[in-house]
Image (cartoon, rainbow, N blue to C red; front, top):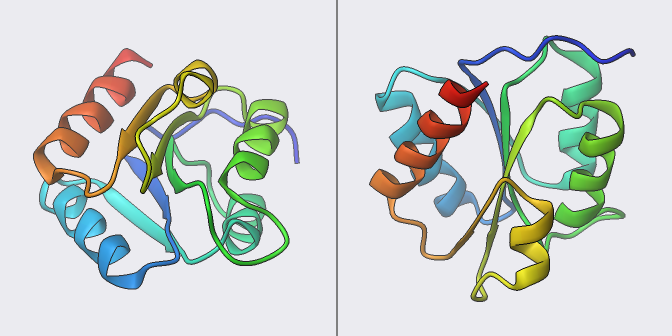
Length: 125
């Protein structure tokens, strides 16, 4: 699939902890965004390859499966470079995280801060 124009109101959340994923999704849906969810980076890749483009991906770094959040970010940068990426982690964001992602946040993620960052990135195009 070739690079597609990203869809500014569509967000994919990739998080293996279901309660965290549901909470993040609820905040963004309340803000009027179309939110899709994946539990692993492998699942996210299937979704990204099979659906209309998204404007932003929010991904945890450590997840079960053959790929992690950094692998997913690498794929996005190669295949969908216009898609914005927010990395989330249970650890304090490192310099490497902030250098490769558009935004890096530590857990627990504040819903208002997440919504602000998502809107800022999507509006920036």
